[in-house]
Length: 549
Image (cartoon, rainbow, N blue to C red; front, side, top):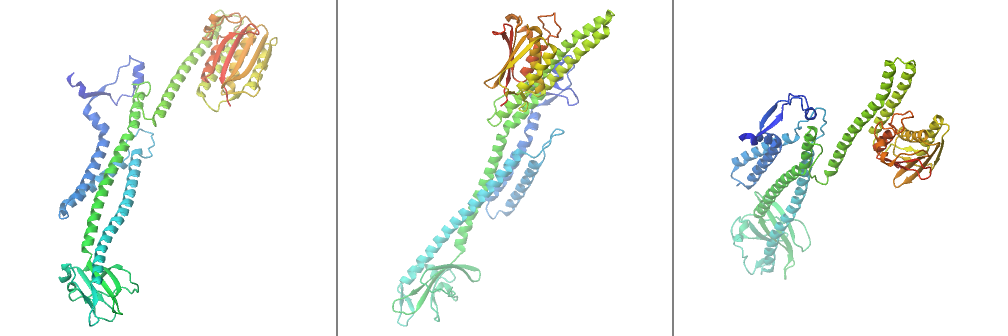
């Protein structure tokens, strides 16, 4: 179909069945599917991320444009400021809004939101501190340069000063700057002494500089002054004793701070604009980094959705090093559940097979109207009950697989099983050897069941002697059960583990003993194998179970 590339078929939301049930039963009619255009699927998937990126770009662009506008474009700046505020408010609402979740899910916040907010706060704090430090350095440098110029003029004044015939200060050369001759030009000088009329530049006109602070040294002093209305001054002064005069003269040079303040304000505007743009750029970069960094988690969510929908058996695809262990654990959990389901099916088959023979015996006895029908029913019911108890125990063992808290001491279990089997077969001699302190990662009742099956089989099918050896072997505890019977041919040692297989049908039994031992041992990641006993000549069963330290 021509438009098939632009359409996606999805299951109808009205159908309650899941994908796995449909795959398991092909005869069930598939639910109705709705066809959705691909562009709509893409819009739904990336709508939130696209909206966040667009709002960040709009707000940052508006603020950056405001900083670059001329000061006289007031209304344009106000409009852009309103636009940026609205964008930031909308962005805050989108970020703090809870994402839609499934029923029962507890949401504690967004990882991406936390990362962006923490990054934004940290970026703002660092840039604010760095901007303040840089402002102090640059402002101090501009101010020192301004003061050096005033100090240069002050030095030229007192080096050209002399004492006139009337005892007043005169200059042997005029000041070089023309502004000293222009009234209220913003650059002034004055020479004064206590109880004497001050001698000043023409630029002061009808004003005079205050005598200043009371200091008795001959050092240069610099300070700001507001003594003239509407004009802040930067003053440099120094006390000098001229040759031939006992008077201490105070030379003062003052200049309006308007030029200095204008330079500082221009410098600060540049710093603020630059650092705001830098902050916005870094925050946007942190947002993009967060979005890209959390992308594997979004992909993992999609893989889990495919897994739940029956479209995949496990989580596939390469993942980052931080996410890969979680994916491995999830896949291991899936395999664990699959294995448990398979074991449950196997145990159900074992149980059904074990119950089939007693039920057949009861039905035959009932059909034939045997005289011992009651005894037959009791005997076979006891057998069925024992099988049910065995399989329930194995089902519990499956649920305890791999538990680090499952542990049992080998020797007490072996001792109790030996006493029980000795009561059933009093003519059989059972001997055991090995350390008494060994433990295995197995539940006690499961260990009793495995040892009971092996030792009972050895006593039943042997010639009267059973020998059990316990030893530790490289992380495992190895239990050897030997008898002096006829043994099992090598070609039958694999088939004997199948359900219901019996080589000696002359003795009572269900054919499940070795199958039970194998199943329970595999649950705990152990093994069981059959060999020939070199010492007794009969069968040797080697049971290996994980050791518990």
